[in-house]
Image (cartoon, rainbow, N blue to C red):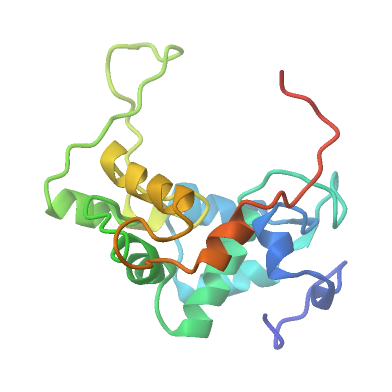
Length: 194
């Protein structure tokens, strides 16, 4: 994915896109996650430098499941470069628009510009639990590991596409093979959540 970058402590040839998406890459990079999800201080060049600083995960080797946002953030940098458009535009073009998800976006500026009402964050641990927290997402903190706003009706459109093998109406919107593949378990866990 990044043939010109050199990584310390792991062979990037061993890490697949699948590893990044299913949390089995064995890679850690808190700085990349911090920049893309919290500080918002980044651009294409700094994200690339941050990707180059990825290192082996201290608690989870490659192949072991460890939930992390790192894989999606690394993949978003590659997608931006590979396709010459932002991962947000790729979502718009390949998923949101074809499914008619007109009130879903990976950009807070779009939600703001269109006047969409948005839920605000609260915390029972706050000094003022009845007041919204000061945290406000921006375009630069809407990262590829969940940086999206939507509505229940739009999410229902996505669910209908999942349940109808990509054909939610009269014509195919998503390839049935893609939908079927997305339903196959990717990782086996030894934990039970009952």
